[in-house]
Amino acid sequence: MSANSTLEYAFAPSAVAGTEAALLPAPSRVAEALSDLMAGFTRAWMWSALAYQDIKLRYRGSLLGPFWITLTNLVLLVAMGEIYAVLFKVETSTYIPFLMTGLLVWQFLSTVVNESCSTFTAAQDVIQQVPLPFSIQAYRTVYRNLIVLAHNAVIIPFGLILFRVPVNWHVLEIFPALLVLCVNGLWISLLLGTISTRFRDVPPIVANAVQVVFFVTPIFWPIEAVGDWKPLLMLSPVFAAIDVVRAPLLGQAISLHSWLILLVCTAVGAAFGLGFFVRFRERIAYWI
Amino acid sequence: MPSLHLRHVCVEFPIYQGSSRSLKKILISGTTKGNLARDAFDRVNVRALSDVCFDVENGERFGIIGPNGAGKTTLLKVLAGIYKPTQGRVSISGRAMALINASVGLNPDATGRENIILRGMYMDIHPRAMRRHIDAVAEFTELDSYLDMPVRTYSSGMMVRLAFAISTCIRPEILVLDEWLAAGDAQFLAKAQKRMEEFVSGSSIVVLASHSLDLVRQWCRRAIYLRQGVVQAIGPVEDVIARYEAAPL
Image 1 (tube, rainbow over the protein chains, first blue to last red):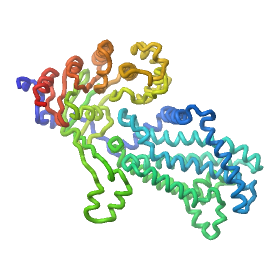
Image 2: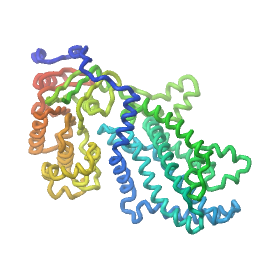
Image 3: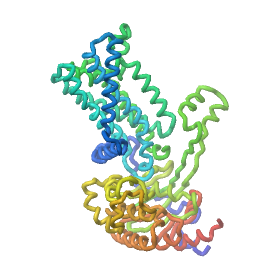
Image 4: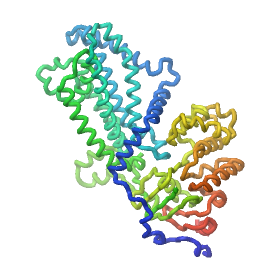
């Protein structure tokens, strides 16, 4: 053991202990999480490019690309539109635009929720190799679904013209509405994304829940159809989320009621999602 | 000035297996009393690093040696800012670039050239800025026409060349390298070493983990010897290697 003399320490780490002054002050968890969210947001070029890449990879080799879903929707609309219009005893010309716009929003919401579970697990390799802001993955999830939404929305103008739905200035209200939906998508991605890295059975649980919500929310059936239950269903934030986009597309103003419920839900959810992210952000790299 | 400071760093991994990965089982076990609750938490903590303290200053080439499972890669991930220590403090000043896995961020179906841009994104470099470096990267890799082929056709040595060239095309302040580098051939290693030396002379830190003692001896001045997450020695590279070789297996 002749080398001992030149070694800084052999077994006891006390040699460099007590020199903590050399270290920078540690930022708090809240500060770190907020700077993560900011640093992620300012890298819009990165998450938008990653989102486009996701879509490209998903539809590689298919002729129509993401428009396949648009085509599938068209078939679904015609089939459901004819049958359910009879079931609910409404005119096809009012039912199909209602169904078309409702499904458009629902597909956005439900895929954001389902895919938010894989926000971090899908980026596993990168998270374990490169120190990037975690929030980038959440922005990527939401943005990817916005791109899909844009593809699905292509049929909307045709439908509205075909069924002579009065289009007016209210249609511009979809932009603030979509912005609020994206904020919701963001906190849901951070929350479910983090939980799913720790508990691997969360994605199927979420998928089941989403399916149930589809049937109990007035998406493919008019809210009037439930009669006395209507006031209760009006309290559903999912209904509010659908309504704020569907109403302006059908030429109506967004009701104050829907705005109020959606904004309260956004505030509560964002606070909870952010709190959760602050608490568990550092653990994501360990859990994944 | 880039520098690394570690004080009493511990990293503990929770190993989740079986039912501790399941939210359902944990919720159910929370409502039932007794042994069942304990059984549902198959939690084992593995201490990958314990009480690690050291400093690496500007312009240093620092080696990490140790047998398999010593915690070398875990330590690299701490230095790169990927793992936040469960105890202790780390302060990293400077932009750290980690090359822990050669294939990260590389899309096997895209060509070498496309991957330069892709990988650059994960390095926080805008595609527009990265495009200016393509020629320099291509030159360093000496892959020539292979750069227009999909990366899945590459040998592991070629992959290493490409990944190394991309990661070092912009001088990182702190470069963290894992042992996969050794997959390159002697000619590439010589070239890579030259590039490292350029970096270090221009104020950068290089940290290399490897169990190839020759590589560490050639590249590093100081080294740390880890064994089961515990520091055995820190000091001049020859002395630390001597200690490592003297250790019973």
